[in-house]
Image (tube, rainbow, N blue to C red; front, side, top):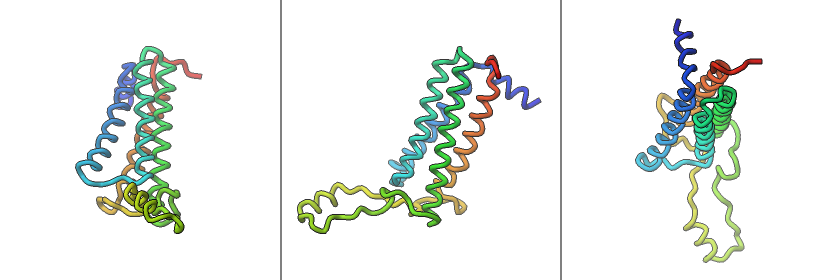
Length: 174
């Protein structure tokens, strides 16, 4: 019965894309709130994870615009699912860097300064430096970092989006 009522929600052409947009914007809003009000400066991998949410939001907006065309809506929702899945992959990589399982990207580590640079050049580099290491866990709850929670959220959102794409009604199935 619950599965039928859930599938019935997929009859509403703009509901799934609207939910994707709302969740994506909510996640981005939470990330920005933790940054600007919570004082948690993001590392480069945190920023990359935000791009995945932006991609999902863009696909959700495309699904809203194409709501009358079930096939196009199905593709937009599936692409949003793939964006969430990409975000989960980036978050898994980030958790591995935090746990010292592997080394992060070059941007994850402190910059190397040219020893032959002048004092003025070094000063310019240092004053313009905004570096947050990727292997430092800045916040956790129950031993799980923000990147760890993002793995769980992104995997759930990817699964839900891909399930919805497969079950959108009104679309021809091959």
